[in-house]
Length: 294
Ligand SMILES: C[S@@+](CC[C@H](N)C(=O)[O-])C[C@H]1O[C@@H](n2cnc3c(N)ncnc32)[C@H](O)[C@@H]1O
Image 1: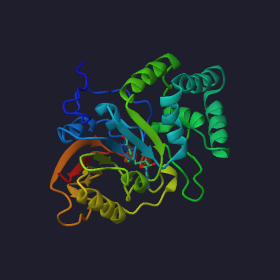
Image 2: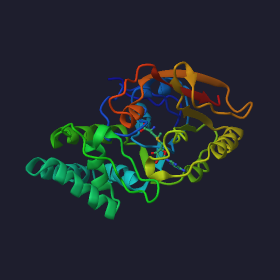
Image 3: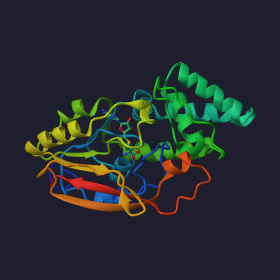
């Protein structure tokens, strides 16, 4: 495996093997396109910021020497912060719940863990739910943020396999500080020469996801503009959902904000599959757009 090297002072470049094993299952994970995304990053940059972290697929594939990774969703950040501060605790959270599931009725135990999470949203329950829920698609009821996904038909990975993933992700995130924060707060900390990778929620399909947060794409564009003006590199992923050759989600981007755009083909849409079980998804192709301010 090639390891990342520091070439000029504190600046960094990416040189690590692709990571294929996610710590979390997450809707909209960039697992499939993380490598081309990382390849599109500038060859040198200062601190790496990933303010819409989710399952951190790009972070894991970059393994930056110095980074700030954040998200506004508290149970999710509890998991990442525990990874960095007490990885054995993370392993125990998972193993305890897996053991309960294996020794009891699978669906009943899942529902108990879901009830515990819904009563008191927390990282320990959420970690297991995201690995055990149907299709790995965590859904929240819009009205009150209630986590509603039923139990998956698959068997969640055994604790020893999960523990190996924890060890791998600890190595990949050694240089990363994790924060619970809105992206706007984190943007303010980026300086000239730093890099921000944005993978915001997709407004057309993800209103049911991520705790039903409201999100303004035009505000994000304005914030990106301010970062560009002070010399920060910004890369923005946009979900380009393609149906029968037509894009159903077009994004207006302010003139002059982005210098380049790349199209990254991902495959078929998992979210659509979940919403329409049994319906053929032929022709439902996903192509992510990657917009670059540099
Ligand atoms: C498309 S997902 C990111 C997926 C991630 N790239 C991955 O590989 O798993 C979008 C994320 O943005 C987070 N989010 C939504 N609104 C936010 C905000 N205002 N500030 C920070 N994070 C936000 C959501 O909680 C969610 O985890």
